[in-house]
Length: 161
Image (cartoon, rainbow, N blue to C red):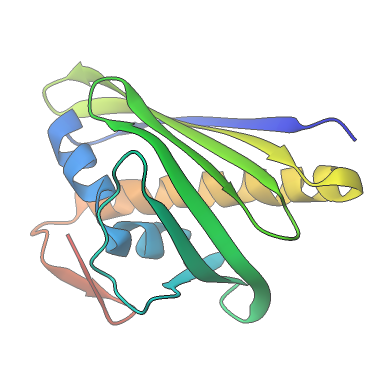
């Protein structure tokens, strides 16, 4: 089955610098993905640094309860100006290549785009539909997170911000 691509774009109420700073934190990923997906580092450490050449493994659960195995994220590019690109996957969805673009609109807002290539064999159409809902959800959570001040908030027991 042919790979599919999900693209979702929203305007975020924050500067490019603020979005980029927050996207570097695992706690942000955990917050925006919840409850569609949960990610727990296999090594137990939440102190990771998203940098090109680094590879991370997570215990992945759908909706926080359905075990979905180990999800691997290999960081290919992580740059404020050029964007973010990761090659991801797990045994159920071997191809989950994720690109993020953050384009400034003005000093207080950015155009944020998630573009994800999905390859899961015969499961691709089903994963594609889930991913469309997931990325719409993620971007709504991003917007709510960015509208809240101060940045020192807690969610699901995790420090956000």
